[in-house]
Length: 149
View (cartoon, rainbow, N blue to C red):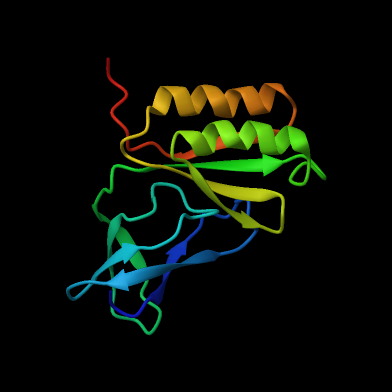
């Protein structure tokens, strides 16, 4: 694997990170193409392992998705103190058992990766169950799964 670099994605003015941009780790491929190596916390339309097109700045600015990975990204905003509870652990185990992973930011914001081979409808129901149990609020950042019946 190539050495990882940071790439930059501009964010809309109103965003969960309260920032103008987000940087993600990426693997350089051919000129101008990078494979994302983590899930975004604030950017919409991107997922882990998507291949993105970027300019040639020192920190490349992402211009868009070149090739979808088929993975979906969700964000969970945890209620205060929930991350260290048994209730969170039990709810998360169900998502983990179907292949989901997360990255955390300040113990309240989690970026959820749903692999391409995971049943997205099942994952969504589990995310809804956590919200109904008042553990978190969640939102869809990108759904790349086929959702047509």
